[in-house]
Image 1 (cartoon, one colour):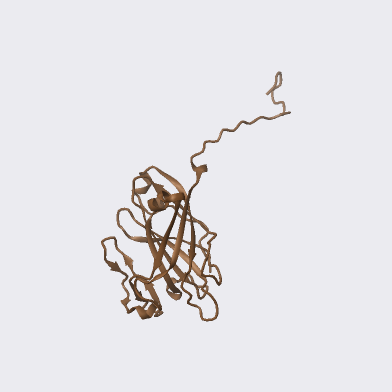
Image 2 (cartoon, one colour):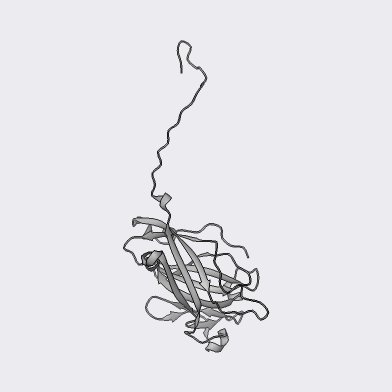
Amino acid sequence: MEQPEDMASLSEFDSLAGSIPATKVEITVSCRNLLDKDMFSKSDPLCVMYTQGMENKQWREFGRTEVIDNTLNPDFVRKFIVDYFFEEKQNLRFDLYDVDSKSPDLSKHDFLGQAFCTLGEIVGSSGSRLEKPLTIGAFSLNSRTGKPMPAVSNGSGLWMEGLRTTGPEASGGVAGKKCGSIILSAEELSNCRDVATMQFCANKLDKKDFFGKS
């Protein structure tokens, strides 16, 4: 599956975000005890991270990890680089999928569960490491593929997806059922705040002046 190589920053999504003091943090994702949706092997998990706009509260896909084959306990290598805005609540959402093909269309893959948190929760946790349960939550069937897709909170406690709501049997689990856990670690990119002082020198330069040195 083709994945975006460069991760966007939140300031590209929100005009308000660009004016708030920020530092960059790197988020690493791991999961434990994921649901196994494959009959003859283990799941091939992919994690998709979403950010919620500070003004319009709309969820937007921020980036995707790589796909790791045949494991229920992935430690993803691809990381998310995020602008951390001080004193701002930055809502994040992580959706897990079992990838069944090379298609970038998430509706063609099996939904494994999701977790919600804020960036501040990750940064403020002990060792900047936060572990949360993955749940199926509310979900819907995609009208084209028939596969379950996550329903998304609109920030007011309501779950919205715009797809046909189904019973829990459609996703192979029960709504609210725990589906393993996700481990989120944050590390500040210190080089974003470092100041470098450089000194240059040169020897045996060409003489360009007629009566003196350059």
